[in-house]
Length: 525
Image (cartoon, rainbow, N blue to C red):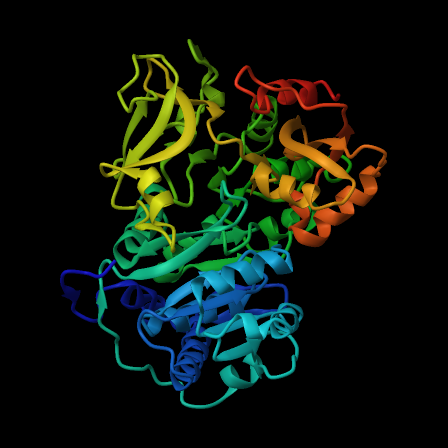
């Protein structure tokens, strides 16, 4: 991942992210649950933090991990990291301690910036993290940690000299689920990251006057998106958690123009309060309502369009090929049918910066209308998985990224997802790999076998369902197994239903038949 040449300083992501301050320094840049901050304030805070990081020895290419809730501090921290040419590693705030420790051991960060709770958990395991030279906390204190608030409040706020970088140098490592049950670090370079950010600006037709409301976590897909509004000098509203009533209020109070939600949030927005479909809240400023990250039930989409108007944009994407792989724009949300089903069930067509193919098991293009695995080629594609060369080689084949997602292309050119070749469960917009839940269940002394699948759910899109075979003479309780998963995994990964069975169904070659279990789960059994 070393560039054959070095780009001149000042033309990359750091240059882009300084444009908001250069143009509209006194405009409100960020609003969170605690208050607001101007572009000038954010510039000065990030410069002070960058100087603190540099004094701790952080240099170009070093990793700096952060595990923070949505808020102005998250953005300021990332600005500081990028200004040093370092690699940002934003971790999911809902990761359980073992997941956080695994990711930290894998990426070997020089510094961790975290909430006090996570900082304390990491401190207890510090011996496992020899690379970690410093810890900073946001929102409280922890033994041995520096307070973020003290560093950004005073001191030299002048910018450090621009850091030269290689276009193919890593800029971001984003940990996502893995087929091995461990998170995988998806690596994006300066080249791919800037390409993604500019895609967001172009495909969403963003402008300086936008007000974006961010309800998903900034370590997820929004990590590629917040810089798009920031470089334009727009305003971004950052919420730590989704609340339907508060969201209706935000629409009106802040004159929101753009919002992204997973289908679960849209369901809660429409159902969250009596008469939600007919609320008089002013949403006239809203021009773009983006949904992604999970299957959108067509009836729910129809209800949303009836309430907000046809301002919806569907996006299909993945961490390895972000963040707008395919798109269905508002004018393409039509009540038409084709051989693949209703247009409203489509994920749209690939954007111009992506080439997309549907492949069979031999890597050949499938016949028109047939189901094939989605493969994409783009400057936006990841460079690979951190420390996983074999996994990288299986995913990036001859320049094409094999997504593992199956789809059909209708005669009108629109893509319809058929199934996921990988058995991932998407619940509330979060990805859950069955094996990591199965591993947690199998660690219980009363469990002999376990298999996990997803089942459709009106609220969450899908829920995690576990099928468990108990050890002879043992009688584990569902509550005990769910509690064990909650201790080891993020809360959204724990099973919502546990079924005890005498044996797991097998395929003719002796593998667990997930298709059989999915059918059972759909029926509630």
